[in-house]
Image (tube, rainbow, N blue to C red; front, top):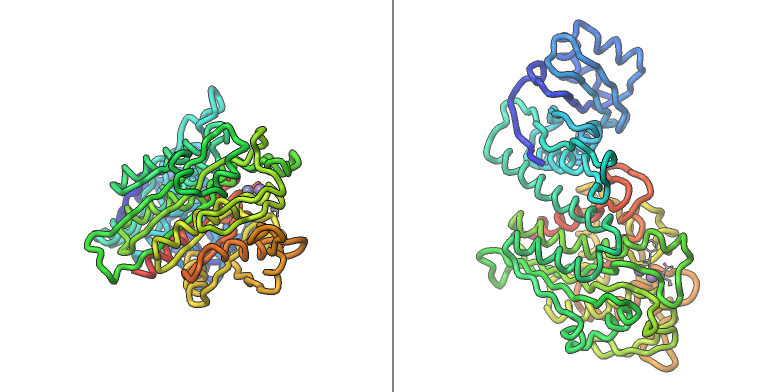
Length: 491
Ligand code: BES
Ligand code: MN
Ligand code: ZN
């Protein structure tokens, strides 16, 4: 999406729709409301009263062909109460774009004009109009999509403001890519396709991307990844992207992101029931987020070295599929007894985390749609956050809070560690019964050594049956904003 900045007055905006954000507790003193009320000879305030508009978060009020103005429709969007934060501003941008389902031209009045607010507004505008349409044909194919938007900000056309908007658009493009990749049907989004997507964005950003094919993965002895891949006709891939900032030196921080790239999770021989299997194309969301985050980090030129590592495979039931009771040796040498083939994510992550640890990062961050248990614990909109380092956990949670994404720290409860003991191997890969997201995290911890590590279980928020807040139905792109904010706070 192209977003331009204009110092035009509200009354002069000729677009199909002009959107204005208002705080419910400031309706009486809002300068835009006052100005439009004068232009429309009092119709706005009459309508506000008639419709008992309160300015609650997401509430809208529409004025068609407002007298004294040049636009076709004017919409007030409620922003709740209190001061206007960047999170509110992003949400406002999303809502404004969502009103443009039939295309047309959109102008929004910037609720705040700091650089961070303008970036958030651009992020909202360019993600709000998202629709996944590649597989629609004929009449189902949308004829018009929202391609441009104009931000009205009086007296604000500085180079800084424009740069902030451009950054917002780049962030939004990464979020929308995650959505595209997650929504793509699993017959087309296979491990090779995911690797090709990583290569494509890497070359667009001018960064390095190495993809290991099955032979190369065998050579590296990533036998846990290979075990999961055995049941599939699709060969696995191991993706490694690297962004190094210009002028990097010894002081430059290094962050390695690892993401679960399970392009389809049938459960393997411990097969899922049909209902639980339907949405399992979403099981590469952590991988998608990882690729898109490195892409955005490179485009934003964050002053941090960023790696993205994605083990990519399907979990299927072919005649060579791995079995409960099998034992495999991980990349770092520990042997693992397989208990349930549906707990496949932690296996491919174990090899990837051990490989990532060898890169000696300052911080190791993994994202995975890992456990249904995490959704039981926290609900569908909140990700679980686990860490072996309190300061890192706080940093990551702080970044999430700044961008308004929902994470909740869960404990790496050592009491549950016993459940991972195996009679015949170094480790079992799962515990029994309660605390499933914790035992999964404890298993991962075995492979990170002393590296400062944070594990984000995004099983809930990565994919959604309904749109919610700034997120659409289907692939949400959850987590990109937090990952980028985390990187930006390190630089
Ligand atoms: N990919 C699933 C987890 C998942 C469930 C993600 C629902 C998104 C929505 C994972 O591979 C899985 O199957 N986990 C099992 C683990 C169990 C067998 C220990 C689960 O959560 O049931
Ligand atoms: Mn599974
Ligand atoms: Zn899975």
